[in-house]
Amino acid sequence: MPTNTLNDRTFEVDAEGFLTRRDDWSEDLAADMAALIGIDLSDEHLAILRFMREDSAQTGVTPTLRRIQTVGGFDIKTLFALYPGKPAKKMAWLSGLPKPVGCV
Amino acid sequence: MDTRRGIVGGMNKLLILGAGTAGTMAANHLLATLDKSAWSITVVDQDTEHRYQPGYLFIPFWMKPERVVKDRRELLHDGIEFVEAGIAKVHREEREVELVDGRRLSYDWLIIASGTRPDPTLVDGMADGSLWRDKVHEFYTYEGSVALKKSLAEFTEGRILVHITEMPIKCPVAPLEFAFLVEDHFRKQGIRHKVDITYVTPLDGAFTKPVASKELGGLLKDRSIRLAADFAVERIDNEAQKLVAYDGRELPFDLLVTIPPNVGQQFVMDSGLGNDAGFVPVDKHTLRSVVDERIFVLGDASDIPTSKAGSVAHFAVEEFIDNFVAAVDGRPLPNAFDGHANCFIESGRGQAMLLDFNYDTQPLKGTFPVPVVGPMTLLKPSRANHLGKLAFEQIYWKMLLPGHKLPVSSHMSMAGKRQPKE
Image 1 (cartoon, each protein chain N blue to C red):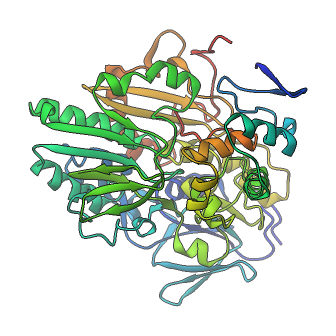
Image 2 (image 1 turned 180 degrees about the vertical axis):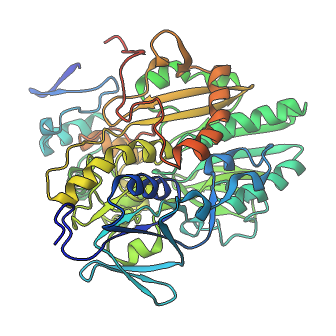
């Protein structure tokens, strides 16, 4: 697996740049990564990422937008406003979780 | 006192909720395994019709609907009691299951095998829209696939969307198979040029795993099927005949074939056993409920992170039997399920692909089940795979459900698979 370095923080990533080791993640790293895709990471942004990490620690998978809404209580429209374009992918990338996938 | 199977006086009662693929297999396997003089096995289901669900994919095209149905009771071996009733609630403190008709069945051990169901009420404009079962269809139910057959037969030109609302869904490759089959259907009729087909997914592509994406990424383009990725549906606009996404994208359609959100059964939710989607959280290796050691969950009803599919239920049941016996004896559970799934993907043109994967290994290229020889090819369309898929119907009824061993290991094997180069 390749390794990336950002502002002196080193972390292992897959071919698409998603973190592969859960423990490499930190909120500071997320903020630095967010800046790369034009997002100024606020507490509102972070609350969603924190929920996703806690949730996936229990379920073993990255939560879907629907689950982030029904379990996390974050409205899907808010997710689109905070992470424009492709929120599912952007939030997974920033929370250090695997990209949402199908079986193939 | 009989202590052989942890029984304290009298018969030990095993109750199985659901007589579908997982419930039927588990009942038949356990009847052969457990001491008949010490156990009663009861299976509950809301009706007597067992449906061969892989057939739902073919009903809109060529399969006779009646062919997918058999009587559940005939598929359960003699010695298994069948109760036809809806399930209202599991009272796990009392170890009782309440039925819709008010009866209560007590149990010592409970297997939940109640599967998953599409819930089209979760999307605005789907089940409550004027176009439902007219121009907005699904093929995840018997009724749905029969209704779709009629609409498809009348369809001569226009825009078709094949759409996944949200993951997880049962048989995750079925929408893709439908897209390939519907393309082939119109090609054979000579009107392919009048039909515009788009595959719409909330994921970032039709193929999301690295090797599959590399090998098969061009397949949709080759068939001139458009792709709308990262599409999070907000609602269906019935008046304008458009699928509307949260990001403002709108896809017009003349026929929408959608996969509604898949959820667990209502009684699971009402019993407080399910997660937000009604799937029961379990240990992914033992399939034992995380809140109640007397409950195991087989098939689509659990939250294990692999495909919801009959093949997974099949492999999981084989691992489960020894674990169940150990659990009753109070011993550590010997087997760990690896999430093994083995799925055929119809790719049109009389061919199919084959996937073989588990929790840790993505679908790879190679041959199956024997290295080099095959006869089936992994991640590559072939005639042999298509014939395998068709032959599976008889294997399902005659070998799988009765509980006969198939010559395929319940653990995934790396033999015949090629690892991608780093």
